[in-house]
Image (cartoon, rainbow, N blue to C red; front, top):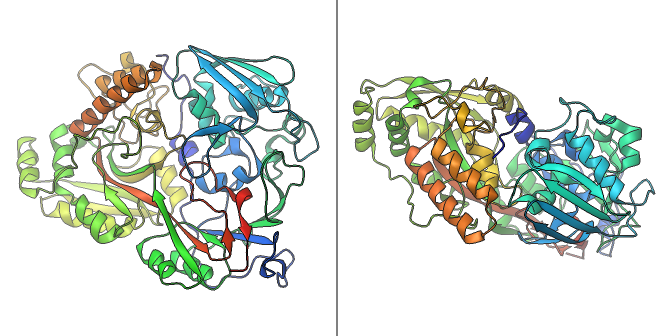
Length: 558
């Protein structure tokens, strides 16, 4: 394949909510203060409150990879192809028909769609959207520092040209056969912007979004971490069923769960084991869950810390860390132990692979064989706030520290708020780090290539070495292990070019076995998607990709 010709930064991919400071009290979010009678009337319409752990950083889908940002932008923007609510199947969005054959994608666009600024949606809007996202020579390109790393990963690396066929037809030519491409068009980063807004607003789209979605922006109160949206009356699709949606940030999981119970929130996410119990015990709400498509892991930075370049050391640590105990005793029923980079609900999962067993004796033997029988000290960088794939990172880090002390290794835990943590790992300063990934499109490529391929050509990997330096041109800093195994790279590159689904699955099963054997990560867990939903909420489905699909939600009496 053609390697990435632009450097993809981890921060641009993973700037996600790390949790805000704890909220001591929760106020019912209403515009301009006062009380909100509308959401108490039990009738169609009203105000829906969605409580989460952190505020947004931007409202421009091309300026972020944050899951918190996407929750809001997904209400205001549409993509050409969409994900079925609550599932992973593709469905019609701003395109009604599509086809991928070899390197050519053709799409028929929906007619009669209107942007929030009153402009009609046409093929020109997607072309302008694509160029703004990927083309530094475009007159309205907002700058490399502004555009997220999804620019290359989603479209830029694969698309050679985009041409229109009248106002409502598109032909997209790819640089190679690329199996995940249709799913990439459904990712939040592929949201379609208004050409007029691109020209008139530039970077101001970060606070003045203009989409075709079911809701439009009314107000963003950054001081109180609340975003108010109103129903867009000219929305082309089903819904919305409520008049307004407010996204409000409540940093503490337990406080968020209490807000749901008291009726100050209608839907909450970011739940851990304890806060889930609060919801389960509530008479006013229920806990809903669905198998997630994610991975939590601890990565070894081979470029930064020499002992990790020895596979025996990586395998020793994988044997010494009791991931089963972390999952069962800390995550307590909201996750399962991982054996490979993808969960079992993704095509290409290798059912023959078992998680590393907990074996400190075998770990000590491997360390002795590698010449580290006297041990060594390293830093484990971790984020402070819960993530879906690691709902209690601080306790998990303590278990890792204790387990590794038992085999003679000394761990210094470096805890940081999530955004500074991403800066730190983006620059490769860590020895080892906790991280994770929630899928963008449910394709195995979104794990294997995005997280474990260094983004460079196989020819750029030094002979006899399975890692590269962070200063290598084109290096993908999502690969926080700096792992560059050419056999693995070949498998994932071949899988991208393969359209036969079973052949792809077999290539990923091989890649999973190789990753397990080479151990660039300690494979920790795959977590459930958990939501707390008030009894008055109807029509909400727990999303695994995209969403939340709040256009389908209505408020009953509860």
